[in-house]
Image (cartoon, rainbow, N blue to C red; front, side):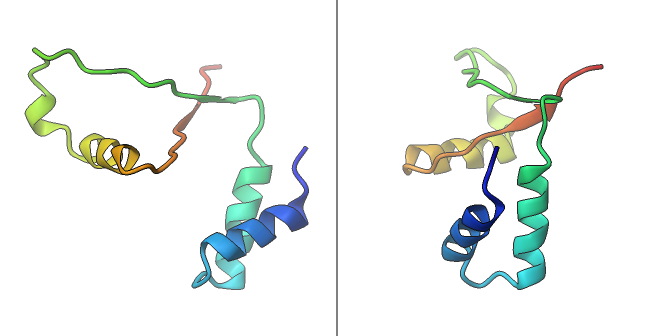
Length: 79
């Protein structure tokens, strides 16, 4: 279980320009994540993937990752 006060402190340090309302909303979202969410594991595209020229946001995420960012993508599990 996450300590909400510690979480808010981390969010305030990381996002110093965020309003109190934004920090509270982010903390609510993080604390509210339950077992219905699963982390997506990395899937590499094959070299011959015809979507590689049209990857959009995925390419942006890959560039961030190459720059040292840590990104976790979650999706809701199927019922």
